[in-house]
Length: 79
Image 1 (cartoon, helix red, strand yellow):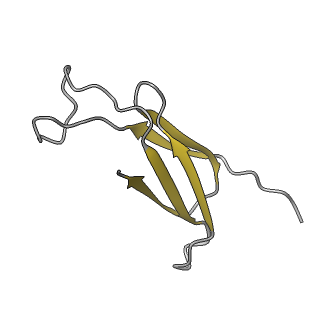
Image 2 (image 1 turned 180 degrees about the vertical axis):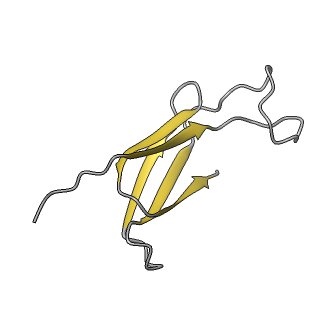
Protein backbone atom coordinates (compact mmCIF):
# COMPACT_ATOMS: atom_id res chain seq x y z
CA UNK A 1 0.00 0.00 0.00
CA UNK A 2 1.11 3.55 -0.69
CA UNK A 3 -0.43 6.97 -1.06
CA UNK A 4 -0.10 8.38 -4.56
CA UNK A 5 -0.62 12.14 -4.77
CA UNK A 6 -0.21 12.52 -8.53
CA UNK A 7 2.31 14.51 -10.49
CA UNK A 8 0.52 15.75 -13.59
CA UNK A 9 -0.59 19.29 -14.25
CA UNK A 10 -2.99 20.66 -16.82
CA UNK A 11 -3.81 24.28 -17.52
CA UNK A 12 -3.82 27.09 -20.02
CA UNK A 13 -5.56 30.33 -20.86
CA UNK A 14 -9.16 31.23 -21.68
CA UNK A 15 -9.47 34.24 -23.99
CA UNK A 16 -12.05 35.77 -26.30
CA UNK A 17 -11.13 34.86 -29.86
CA UNK A 18 -12.57 38.01 -31.43
CA UNK A 19 -11.34 37.23 -34.95
CA UNK A 20 -12.22 33.51 -34.79
CA UNK A 21 -8.84 32.22 -36.00
CA UNK A 22 -8.24 29.85 -33.05
CA UNK A 23 -5.03 31.60 -32.00
CA UNK A 24 -4.56 34.32 -29.41
CA UNK A 25 -3.49 37.59 -30.97
CA UNK A 26 -1.90 40.48 -29.08
CA UNK A 27 -5.17 42.36 -28.63
CA UNK A 28 -7.19 39.36 -27.36
CA UNK A 29 -7.04 39.42 -23.58
CA UNK A 30 -7.71 36.56 -21.20
CA UNK A 31 -11.13 36.29 -19.58
CA UNK A 32 -11.30 36.27 -15.78
CA UNK A 33 -13.90 34.40 -13.73
CA UNK A 34 -14.59 31.55 -16.17
CA UNK A 35 -15.41 28.29 -14.38
CA UNK A 36 -13.84 25.09 -15.72
CA UNK A 37 -14.52 21.48 -14.76
CA UNK A 38 -11.99 18.67 -15.10
CA UNK A 39 -13.34 15.13 -15.41
CA UNK A 40 -10.68 12.49 -14.88
CA UNK A 41 -10.52 8.79 -15.65
CA UNK A 42 -7.31 7.83 -13.83
CA UNK A 43 -7.47 4.13 -14.70
CA UNK A 44 -8.72 4.66 -18.30
CA UNK A 45 -11.68 2.33 -17.82
CA UNK A 46 -14.17 4.77 -19.34
CA UNK A 47 -15.69 5.86 -16.04
CA UNK A 48 -15.18 9.27 -14.46
CA UNK A 49 -13.16 8.77 -11.27
CA UNK A 50 -12.92 12.38 -10.13
CA UNK A 51 -14.28 15.84 -10.88
CA UNK A 52 -12.45 19.06 -10.06
CA UNK A 53 -13.42 22.67 -10.68
CA UNK A 54 -11.47 25.90 -10.88
CA UNK A 55 -11.93 29.46 -12.07
CA UNK A 56 -9.66 31.55 -14.30
CA UNK A 57 -7.66 34.27 -12.60
CA UNK A 58 -7.66 37.96 -13.52
CA UNK A 59 -5.52 37.18 -16.61
CA UNK A 60 -7.65 34.24 -17.79
CA UNK A 61 -5.19 31.59 -16.60
CA UNK A 62 -6.33 28.34 -14.99
CA UNK A 63 -4.63 25.18 -13.78
CA UNK A 64 -5.19 21.79 -12.18
CA UNK A 65 -2.29 20.12 -10.37
CA UNK A 66 -1.35 16.85 -8.63
CA UNK A 67 -3.27 14.82 -11.19
CA UNK A 68 -2.89 11.06 -11.58
CA UNK A 69 -2.22 9.61 -15.02
CA UNK A 70 -5.13 8.76 -17.27
CA UNK A 71 -7.60 10.57 -19.46
CA UNK A 72 -8.74 14.05 -18.54
CA UNK A 73 -11.40 16.25 -20.12
CA UNK A 74 -11.69 19.98 -19.45
CA UNK A 75 -15.14 21.51 -19.79
CA UNK A 76 -15.61 25.27 -20.03
CA UNK A 77 -18.77 26.19 -18.17
CA UNK A 78 -19.88 29.10 -20.36
CA UNK A 79 -22.56 31.42 -19.11
